[in-house]
Length: 283
Image (cartoon, rainbow, N blue to C red; front, side, top):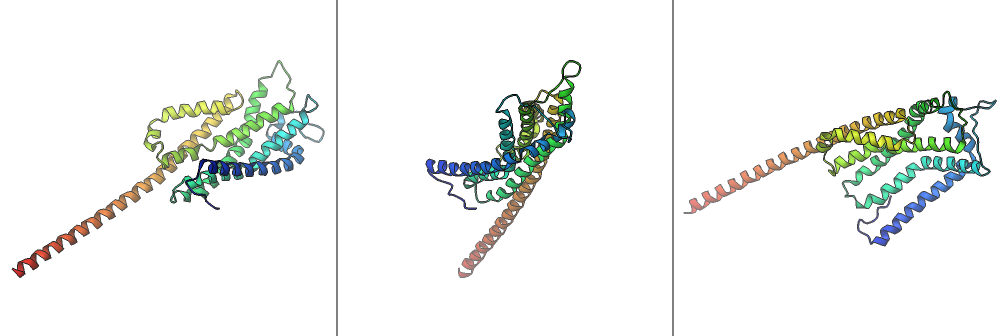
């Protein structure tokens, strides 16, 4: 991948940003066209974890209602759009990271490919975790609230919208370990400070979990908080291991430098002694 110069005029930076955004948009437009044709299959897949809380037709497929003449198109386009976001996330991450790559030092650029791979893996893991673990208990709790006084009729736009928000929210939230890791590795926030302020961090994660979850369910908030807490601790552990190696390497380099300095001083002292002996022999 070509790497642009670290120093460029402002308009050149804006031009490069526009180029990368155009690539993202073109990729997503192609994906939207493809996924729009496959929306009926995608909708069944999207609603599979909550199918037991929805009515089904004679073939066992989940059925929903739309209230307006254009609602069906809006729902299909929404599903296709967000499916394209998930499918194109590797392209989005690659283009965003590549935009900041010229600003990194040569020894820092080695982190580009691992960062890209881990960011994609964390996003996918977040969406899969939400799909398999979160959606079922979340919708069970939400639909149980109607017991005894109401009958739920699934409206397509609202159900699709909340499920998509769940998926995207968990995918983005699971990028937390990468953020914490680089904050400590680049010493933007010292590891010791994050470790000492663990109470404040835990409260912040709980508040963040409440903001990210699109519903008012305590079940989803607690599950997301538990997942983010585990990922946060794993990121600190990884940072500690890397920092420990860095400190050990720095210590070895300092010991090697001290050894070389001592050898140089001993050699210098020996030369001085020999010169002194030569002057005394001449006298």
